[in-house]
Length: 138
Image (cartoon, rainbow, N blue to C red; front, side, top):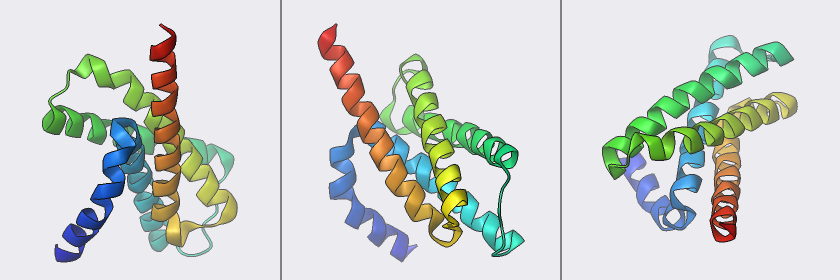
């Protein structure tokens, strides 16, 4: 548990700047990457997903990540469900799909959690910026 606490304390200054969108993307990416890494360990190093399998896996992981993130947001930030249900769904669908296809295409299963984290940060940050831009135009 100590290494995990140390990692959280190291990442906190960076994740604080990302906002809610960036952090939800990061969580979705890490969940997806960890699951892909576990799948690779279970099946073996020759793991290659077909397009159909990749879409199915991305959908399943997006739904799982969505449930986990919505639960965390409701529990920790005490936000209303109607405020986060659709934005988090869009974020998790994008992050999980991009992570699964990137990891599968380039065979990055051993570092899938890192790839997922980076994709999640980028997608989440871009969605935050898009949200701010759309609010300014209203």
